[in-house]
Length: 428
Image 1: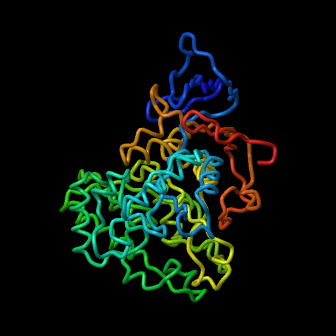
Image 2: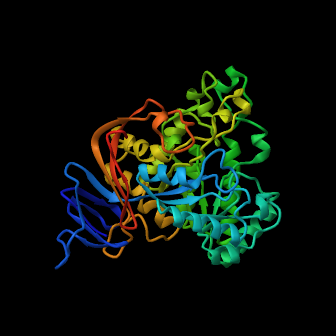
């Protein structure tokens, strides 16, 4: 169908647009920005008065659970949550069951996503077979099947030599390697940041050095192998500084941060709050401030959800035994816009970090609204407030520390491939 979105404030950072312009889509693509083409007749007109019209959000890290962990979530539930959150492109992590380490599993995920038609799911292939960190996966086959990157998710690699070989092999096929930098020996079974709060609560802790030591190693190997490396989910000011220095030295490295890391700190764990059990753990106020600066200046080009839905039982144990992770699809935009309210950066920068920023890391054509671009659109009212209620979340995972938080940016429409996949109603 053809759709005209009129009277809205169109923000498209990739094309430097921030103006009151209409947007017109026909089928799966954008056909005009501003005036409608001659003889164009819209099947539906969306009045976006008082609203922002921006590209559909691009999320670089979402654990969608299916196949294998349907007791936590399904592709149907999580793509519905994505649509409600304005997210039209999701990069799923490879830690499914079976692991995404062969073309058959990649095709299964893509086929299910196409059938659901709620969001675009792109697969991250496993860096090693079974994510065991020992034998390299068949990266050529994974790329041919449609994987846009490779990663070992949260699983450690057996050795620095394995990592070197993996980076070299991925480079051969032009694949970006997503690394979650953490020294497993320094982590040593910890579950909270090594600091005053963990010491007082008697929790096994993880020092900041667990991340910075691993980042130093990974940067050295990235330079040696000339690999394109993306650092996932940074949590410390030291790591952010090291990435900035590497970029200044022209290394082909990029980075992202989870939205929740830009708001919460180790203090939020106080009281053994299981919803705040995340990996990497929440760090200090200084770390949070440094991460915010890195996002503002572009060192960290993407804010992601790091979506990890869990069943209720996963968070109802003693803190060290709970499963880490937050259900984050439906709060990605709200948490990002909250940073605008707190004057960390302006609205166009916020939109860039969840659209063109993550898309550009992988050279994807998404996260932009130029003529010929995919018709993926998010429409939200920047002034209308909404409160997160876990009972009405579309995600099967209700594990979030943001229940009851007040947010700006009420999403009214999400378009994916030129179709309306979410329309706000009075019950939302």
